[in-house]
Length: 189
Image (tube, rainbow, N blue to C red; front, side):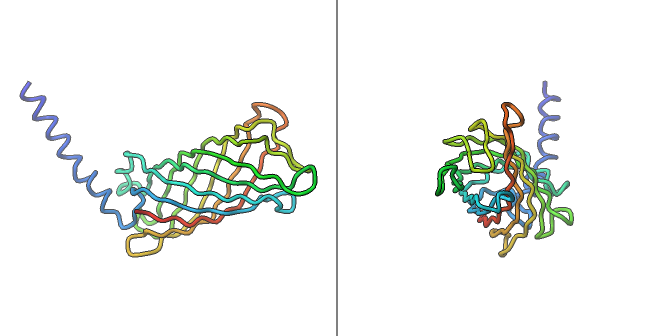
């Protein structure tokens, strides 16, 4: 029994420097963050605008970042879409979503530049309908790709450009999907 405890201490002790070094990354990818984001649809002449506020919650497995340059996080957001209506004027849509995101920071995790990709799901308060496009469900899957740069002494500020796709994955027809180009400002604590 004593050998089991000694082995456990050795394994845990060997992992501590790795776990502690994640907190010492040059940029704060393993710290929580808040963001604002705005963008426009890449169809219908860009007549649908989307604005979002969100929070980034790092996964505990981010301690691998010093080795791989990768971090993992949850992206929780609330969004507002303003789109042309089938009946003159515009219609507003509220959306809630969550995305599991992986981020790669270039130069072994030491670069201010990063790329990220995510997959998640969203739900809207109404079925999205415009004169040229109509969803069939309020639930949508979402995929996101982004490229950005950190600023500030510890990388607490970030700007990124993102492409984001929404569709119901053909759960129900029609399923035209929607693609947006977005600009995000993020602040890490």
